[in-house]
Image 1: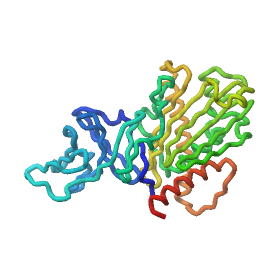
Image 2: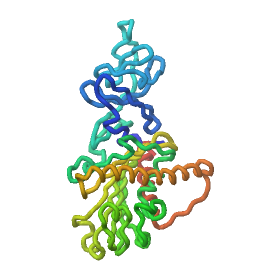
Image 3: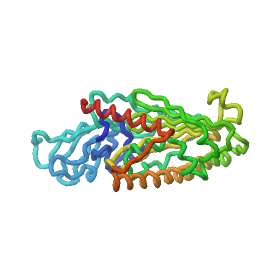
Image 4: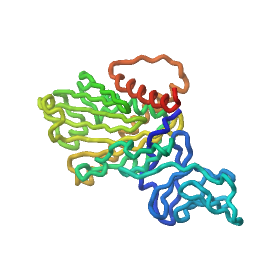
Length: 347
């Protein structure tokens, strides 16, 4: 089961080209097959990916102005999903329509709403404004395409709210000795959960040594917030050792901020959209390209873990597990999503 009355990241804007040569984009979002295209006026359109005549996916068709034409018998559908033309006849059969989904473009991504269109509130899209800010250099993840992961999307949530894993999974990039000696703070809200950890007087993680030349001990923060269903902002950075307790992040410091949205395809496959940003050496394009490469490797390390977890869950769904202290944010986030599912189901 998936939450319907929330936005899902469905594509990078650059994946949906404009002009007569564009190819409709097929995606499966929360179990729903959709076709996404850019109409002749530039607006993004999302429809059920099938023709209501003989069920050929509309993604096999072609764009025709503001509309899409089936590649089998040529039925033409407008942006609202209505059939407006049947080649060879003047009458449109009753009920000749497919589902249309609210779609809009924001923060370089295309967002879809699969639930009640009457309550599709754009303000529920997470604030990823730093992706478009001149104060932050933006490095699109995975070459500007979603990263496929063979796991349930909540395993990704768990991973992003438990950043203690960086010590063990990302040893060459994000680890710091002593990081896990410091506790996490958990803040719970109606539709989100935030995890924060401050670690004082520890070694800098390798990426800050390499990118910023920082070698002395630091006060390091990790912050991760997930907004239901699976929209995440990770913010990490360092201050000189001894200054973090007083500043608590309220002074300029080199930091990395990541926008991540994990979109379920099915119960055990997902698409991860991510963008790595930084507030230092913003104009350094060579560094941006390096960060793109480095952090794709980081994310692939996560993918390896998440897919291995899913394999065990698939084989042994009833295997007992235990909780530890760092699980507090992940348990809270699962509760948020469960409440939203129950509310939609009227439980």
